[in-house]
Structure formats: structure tokens, C-alpha cells
Image 1 (cartoon, chains in turn blue, brown, purple, green):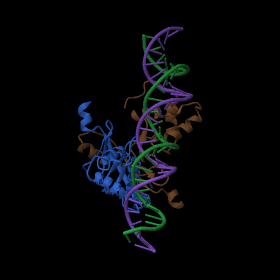
Image 2 (image 1 turned 180 degrees about the vertical axis):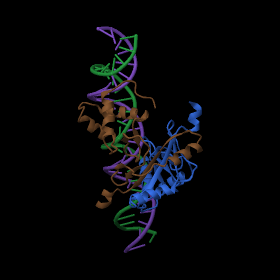
Image 3 (image 1 turned 135 degrees about the horizontal axis):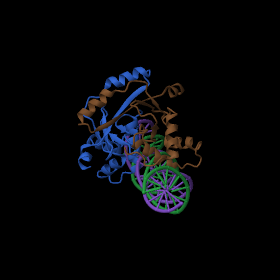
Image 4 (image 1 turned 90 degrees about the horizontal axis):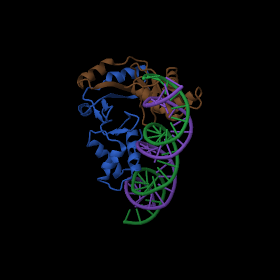
Amino acid sequence: MSAPVKYSHQREAIVDYLKSTKSHPTAEVVYENIRLIIPNISLGTVYRNLNQLADCGRILRLCCDGKNVHYDGFTHPHCHFMCESCGNVSDMDMDFPTDLLNKAKRLKDNNINNVSIVFTGICNTCKSIE
Amino acid sequence: MSAPVKYSHQREAIVDYLKSTKSHPTAEVVYENIRLIIPNISLGTVYRNLNQLADCGRILRLCCDGKNVHYDGFTHPHCHFMCESCGNVSDMDMDFPTDLLNKAKRLKDNNINNVSIVFTGICNTCKSIE
DNA sequence: AAGCAAACGATAATTATTACTGTTTTAAAG
DNA sequence: CTTTAAAACAGTAATAATTATCGTTTGCTT
């Protein structure tokens, strides 16, 4: 949870980009988009900053499938949906079950920090294609 | 969700192993343990069968961190806990919120098949060490 | 028993991510 | 303002997990 020590142009550009989209991009997609603004940014820099930002809680790290890690610029508690067919990750438009987290925290003597809730199924786009 | 076409000794050994433990092993750990019974089994065979078994619903594929996929031989709906420090995955001893899944299914017009609920925090072992 | 495709073992290839190295940038002190 | 020290960087090499390929073996149907 420790914050980065020094300011960096690249890091803030990454945060700005993540705050500008609801698409839950992968590191690779973040890289492609940041390159439009900072053409010579390194992929390693993107990975390093995404990890730092997730570790200090400024962004969310989403591990929905075994394939790619996705990132979310919005850190308020909310549920996600991942399409089993195309792998797309989106927000669920429903209340977050805070009671569930509290119940678990009581059970485990407050060793629990968070909960990840990921619904899976077939998104409307894939449903219409198949 | 399509089942494998032919019986295989190797595949059944993998299922048996996963049913014998509550430790949610990675593919590598499954491989090491199956080798004790079938010494010349290939790592590729383990991966192929774990994927098949997960795809047809005989086992669960758990994607809790971005690092390793874990597998679970018990497919009844239940919540998991992953330690942020050691990465260990375990079952949560609490009721599964079936109502949450049903609510989401209604919201998304039954395009939802399942939900993964993973609590994160520091396990008792890591807590006592730090 | 014969034939065909599924599954296999062995290994090569791919993909995502992290580590390394010399350079640049940030921030604080002189 | 310089100077300085460490953080962060770009570029690239290395690693780790997983998947693909290919010739052989096995399970199942005829």
C-alpha cells in the first residue's frame, strides 16, 4: 500500500487514461493508448506503474481469467462481469454487497481486506453473433 | 462445456487427485503430484486435461491473482480466500450468496452463468510471521 | 482384427510479465 | 541557481506460465 516516492509524468498519464475509460484494459492496451500521448514510453514502465498504482490502491488490479490482468481506474467497490467468449470485462450495474464483506471480516477475525466479485457468462455482443 | 470424447487414465488420475485435496493446486503442483503415480506423464497433458475438465465443469478454474491459475476439484458453489502475502488459496467457511447470483441473472437477462467470489487478506500463518 | 480419431509424451514456441543496465528526471540541500 | 542522490525511465534481455506441434500410442467403433 506504499505510494510512489516521486512524481512521474508517465504514471499520471496512465492514471488519467484509466480514469477516462470504463473498458478495464490490459497492460498491453494501456501501453498502446499511452503511446499516443507519450510515443517513446516503455512497456516496462507501464507494467511497473500499473503494479505500483494497484499496490497503493489508486487503481484496481482485476484477475478475471488466467490469461490477462485487467486494470480499473475506479476504485469504489463494485462487481464485474467477464464474457467467457470474448474475454471482455465490464462493470455490473448493481449494488455492491457490503454486508457480504462485513460478514466475512467477522468470520476471519478481520484478516480480510477486500473481496472480488466477478460474474461470468456470455455478453450480448457474443450472444447475437453465435 | 463439452465433455472429452474418450476415457483417459491420465485425466481420471488428475480428477482423483483434485478430489483428494482442499489445497487448490496450480497446474505445476498437479503435475508434480500426478508424477508420483504416472511418472512419465507430460506437463502438456496436465494442462490440456485441466483445461478440458474446467471447460466441461468437472473441476473449477480459479483465477485469484495474475500469477497462477489454481484448480479446485469441488464444484459446488463456494467462496474462496487468497492470502495477499503467500498466495495460498483456501475455501471460505460461509454460506454462498445464491441470492446475489440470482439477482444478477435477472439483471442481465440470464446471460450470466456463474460468479466467482474471492476474498483477499492476510492468512493467519503470514499474520503470525510478520 | 482393422481403422480412425482422440489423447499422449516430448519438446518447441508463444505470451505475459519481470529483471537488468545505463541514462534521465525529480526533489531536496547547499 | 547549482549540486547531488535516488527514483524513475527507455531499451532490452530474461523468466515463467501456458499453448502448439508432431510423431506415437490408446480407446472405441465397425
